Image 1: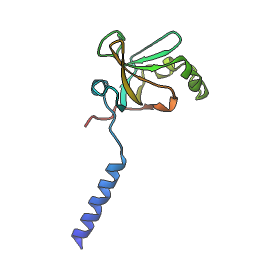
Image 2: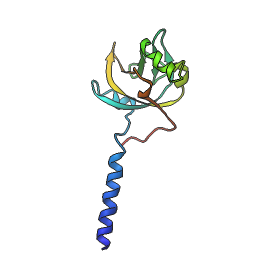
Image 3: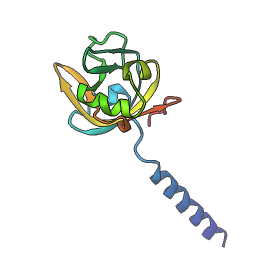
Image 4: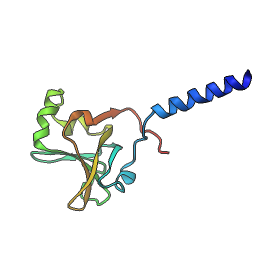
Length: 129
């Protein structure tokens, strides 16, 4: 009987762990996943852009190790509808999780975001596996 309870408890624990989903990646880990859909977690250390918005993992956006979140001008309407009038100001200094496909543009890794639902603000950095 005792072994049956242990088996049921272990099965339940495995079920809960399976529902957690994939762990978010660091910018360094995500940079190795070009053309793959990932969940990236990073602190926004700088922002920029004129008509589009860039959220950067490093204060020096020119650094080759910088990971950028690219929000094109056309997507800004969706952010305004979500009550985020200025994504650069809203996300700067926060830790976010972004879901999207990693790409390379002019030698810099980035994820293009078309929908504010792709970005989630989190309170602390999730531990890496």
